Length: 277
Image 1 (cartoon, rainbow, N blue to C red):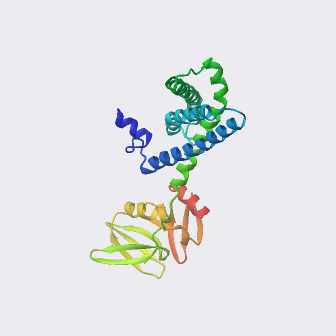
Image 2: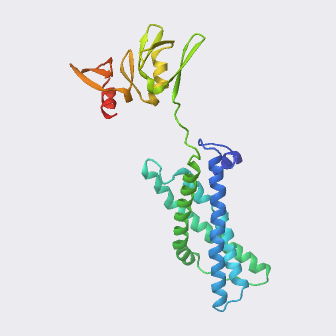
Image 3: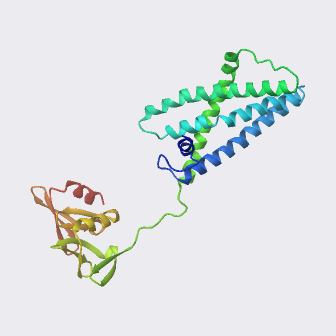
């Protein structure tokens, strides 16, 4: 059970498919919230002192509020893990309503208990008063704080997601024929066609190179790099297409300079991609 809780908090693994980024988000968010709330509480202490209060009581009030808030920060954190602003379906965002209420109740109850204990240790009495009245007053601030915390979690997580270096796509492709390897530039490849147990690469300079491989496996490698399946036996480099010529009945001929390739009506998505490229 402890392991599951640690994982959902982001402190011990990736129960929901996350990695060290989640732990860093928790760490940075906790540190930022602790500093910001401490700054606000310090301002409140100074304001209270200037209005005639002794320094001791405002420190107890604001310090207990700060400690209680940090102690129950896991409530908005867990709610954010379950329902971040980008969650789908959107109705899951309703989780934040009871979570915000629970956070406010815990925060107020927490600092009340701390104040009672501190006053008792000092031989004094802390007048608690009606809980519902204080909760109604504090909830406005707590709900605003809750919303800011959710926004901060999302912002820090977004910043940590941004890669420092954007990896570039390979600009070459290795065509292997037994022990022979020919490395060609991607823009040199006009089309690829199946040839029995081989595939044949048709290059812009007129060369035709064979490689023992099924067309489907070559398609999996080349599709992310701009190649489109136009026929059960053909792939074309979309960036090299010069003409789309209708042949009737929904079929087309794809021209890549002097090279012609069939486009079957069975591949309507290919036609749409080539028209858009």
